[in-house]
Image (cartoon, rainbow, N blue to C red):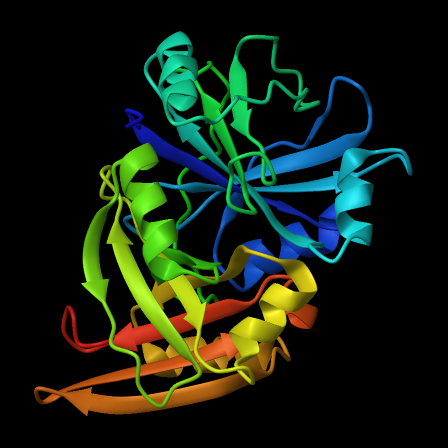
Length: 298
């Protein structure tokens, strides 16, 4: 398995940079660094720090040319939205050999952001990446991280990036792949019940967040429709908030409509969850949850 030292950042692609950065700064409480232009001039991007304990950054990129690969992503059924995950490894040469041992040929695509050849290898979405782009980079490359995000009034009050959720037709097959390639371990395997999906939650070795697999149950499952339209890939991102009433009030203040909400009590402790529609979050389906005690929300 690969030795992953850190989950570096979640990369998203948007048609235009300013509105997406403003949304994540003002509503989500992220903090943006300085914009940079890719070496080939085809995109502009901003790296943001996230509030909370996860120590994972967020990067928003937007195309500046019609010929940009990011524009092609936006125009495809996959975009706009979550585009890649950057992982840090201690040795890229060893990483290449490990990938090949799993019959994954590393893709040395040009990231366009100024990285020199040899600084990054990718697991291509359709060439071993299970429908999602993983970018593997060596030890910290000296790029400046944005200042730590500080909670501010009117924001959601995020305390953690809890997980990314990967939709796939066979959750056990995908879980085995994540265990063999990335060293993830089974945290919880949900039972198939009356719900139109079944979940498996994996623990990531770095401890920064979790990884969820969503498998459709039944032909009318919304996960099945997702797979038919887009194929396997990231379905949503989930953040934990510290105060439920505050989070809902923040959404209302920014005219962001929530949907699919539910709440309950487990072992005497309360929990709640809701979603933000991709149309109001730059193409990203966002899940928010709150729990009164650790492990109550599952």
